Image 1 (cartoon, chains in turn orange, blue, red, yellow):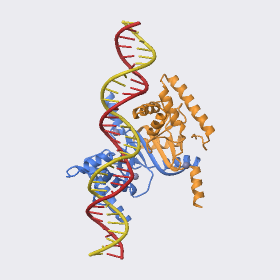
Image 2: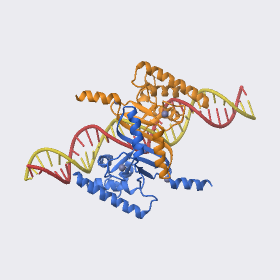
Image 3: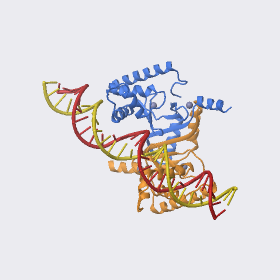
Image 4: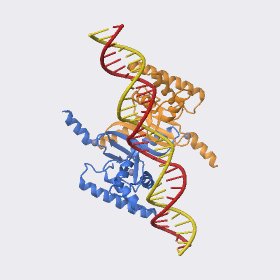
Length: 166
Length: 166
DNA sequence: TAGCGAGGCGTTATAACATAACATTTTTGT
DNA sequence: ACAAAAATGTTATGTTATAACGCCTCGCTA
Ligand SMILES: [Zn+2]
Ligand SMILES: [Zn+2]
Ligand SMILES: [Zn+2]
Ligand SMILES: [Zn+2]
């Protein structure tokens, strides 16, 4: 039932980033972990794109306007931290990272990734969890981590494509 | 309801490979596509490991006993073909490839990947498809491709772990 | 306050995974 | 036998991610 705000508007989006950072600060404070300047900056860059973003894109943005270019480990370490804290998800099917829309509650979510515009929705639904759990149980398998990524067309892109075809 | 044979035995396994290759030959013949020597060899190597296998592992095995080492494109092209024909699946969460257990019927399957022994089951269940489809529909999203990879512990490894702990 | 230790980050190098581009060979249809 | 298409060889490079080491900072303790 959840998902990134859509359609995207600049106004929504700025607030969206702000809220995400605010949540993250509180969450880290409560857990006694350090959301350092660098980590917060990376989190901000992840949210700044309203689409999943690659590690090297973050790296490039991080380097913007700095005297010395940042190096890969800088970004990957920050991303590792953010993933551990559940603030960011990695999408393995496209090697990209996206801000978690519900960082407070632990969850195994699914992602709808538009192949046209790359807009991605993080969705959670009990029925998905249940059916996966049931199938795993049938095989005596204990799930610890999930990567559920569905590629396809979002509403907008499907509509546009239809228009283009006419 | 489907899955690789388990527990694994050498005897099962040899037959398993043989069957897979046989199916593949028939399938390619029926479709009028060419299962060349190289492609068949790669498919065999994929099946030879009873676990998902990396492209560069295949490359290494392909090179074994040959005068000149094979190059990456050789393997990737064969894997591309095999994926197009539905004979092999790519597991993006672990960058590995695995033979399809039901190459005849088109399907969107899920994978249970044991983090301990890497044994992987390909499962299909209507309830998973249904719940995913329903959620996607709620968002006006049209699914074209799925990547559903669940990491955890298989029966054997969970049991062994329990024993080790005692 | 000096010394210690853990965590975070900078830096260099390299590993692991994948593809672009073009040359050559093999296959297929005529 | 010939030409076109498909498959493979070959070289180079692109993309994603991590290992290893050293420095610095900060909070703790003697
Ligand atoms: Zn999330
Ligand atoms: Zn779209
Ligand atoms: Zn399959
Ligand atoms: Zn196992």
